[in-house]
Amino acid sequence: MYPSLVRPRTVLFGLLLFSFALVANAQWTLERSVERAISVSPELDAAEARVEARRAAARQAGAWPNPTLELKADNGIARERGGDAHEFSELAITQPLSLGLSSARQAAGEARTLVETEALRAEHLDLEYRVAGAYHRLQLAQTLLAQARQASREADDFASASERRAAQGDISRRETLRLQVLASEARQVIEATQGEWQEARSAFAALLDMRPEQVGDLPPLTEVPGLQPLSHWTGYLESHPSLQIQQANLTATLADRRVARAERLPQLGVRVFAERDLVDGRRESVTGVGLSLEIPFWDRRQGRLEELAATTTETQARLRGEHRQLLSRVRAQHQRLTHLVAQARHQRSAVLEPAREILDLSSQGYLSGELDLLALIETVQTVRQAENRYLQLLADAWQELAALRASAGLLLVSIDSE
Image (tube, rainbow, N blue to C red):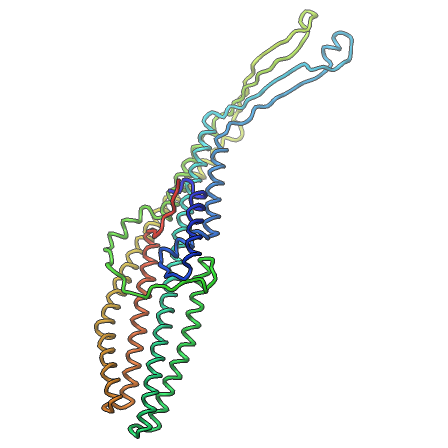
């Protein structure tokens, strides 16, 4: 629940902003990134304002209608006495009686406040998902850039070694040129991956309302640890913001029906008055009480009740449909995540690690003259492809985990409320 979020969130994340400024170059974690995004999100600010607006509207809806004051001035008494002066002759106060209507309207307003509160949670969940997506894309780009730089250094080492061997007459000029071309291609890969890294960093920094150069290093991509069973994720569904929004809409519709039934009751009004009149030739004060009663002759407001009954049925159907969609999505995403985690582990153990071992042996064999250039190039390309595939599987798994959290309604960071 988010009973009141504006003040605590402002104070809490105002302190966080100061700490971020002190450690701008430190390593960013996903949780820290989400906290920063929450602290500067205009979407959350707008959602909080809507909650406060609904809360104020609910308080106003419970207010009783104001009484009406009437003053009447005429020359009736003066004419009775042969004069023509005007004077106040009547004072009246009328109070409408909204029996049951004010409380019903306030309950409906509170239900609408709950809708906006759950919408705020949904906005928070969506923000976390967007931050996680940008975070993992930047992780992948950062790791690919580091890998490209390492590959370029290795290519330069091979090119330098080939030049020494060519000077000694061990290899041909053709092999030396081929390794120099490989070194140039590796430098071009750095330029391409650096551009992708800069784009990913800019997109990530935009969510954090920071300059790209203020974003520190991210931890390297790792395998997703300890995947929870499906029941763990489906257990969060009942409190998912999307379902809670539909449930709150249903509560609000039922409250609107109570308002509509209260509005069908005849509207009452009490009028208390005091007037001055001539009694036996003397000016006297006369007091009295009047009661007004609406006669529901033309408009019995039955159509509004029928409309809300249909809306209730529609909202109940939407609630069931939303639950079905979320459950299906969680199952599919959990299955994909399980598959990606298994693929990444297999890629590492069955492909990448053996390929790296082969590369080490091939490098030693080439430098000692036991292996030709073509075999070395094929081995290098195999390792690079295996590394890229492994990193992509890791990034896909983390992206799928972020999507699974969003579908299950599980938040990484909660907003403190008072």
